[in-house]
Length: 190
Image (cartoon, rainbow, N blue to C red):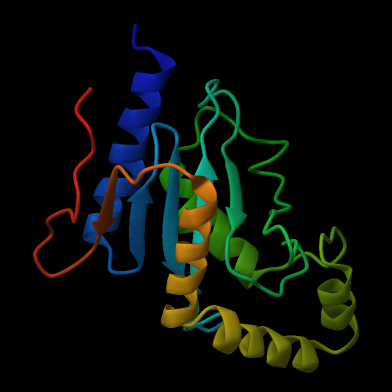
């Protein structure tokens, strides 16, 4: 039987790092045995399109039986995401997490769906929820403004740098999708 640490490392490699190397929309930076960042782009045909967001992911020792802790590190204007902390209000990650879910589901399905279909009736950001319900055009304009201010490639790089300084953990490796399909760093051998 494999240890929880081994399962976490295996899942991070299998469901996050390898797909990121194949997909142009992802970039993964490992910062510890159970902590990493994923940068992903906002879904097309939404006001979030063109944005680059850094997601902090921490896997608990009880993973996959307990959900990962995730949060946006750069600012985003969304009813279900706390603007200051980056916390995400999403039942499938918080209350309804199942060990059957894989990490890749978070970045390919759960977060893109959250950005496409915000739920203003269960807000973490009351201002965003109220604006979406009252004036959708104004909400979309404010989202696009946040994309320009906080989610440009340069802004996302700055948010990642700020997060790295706060982590006080050494980087184990960085994986980027790219032309050569080779990792920019390597994951430590177990």
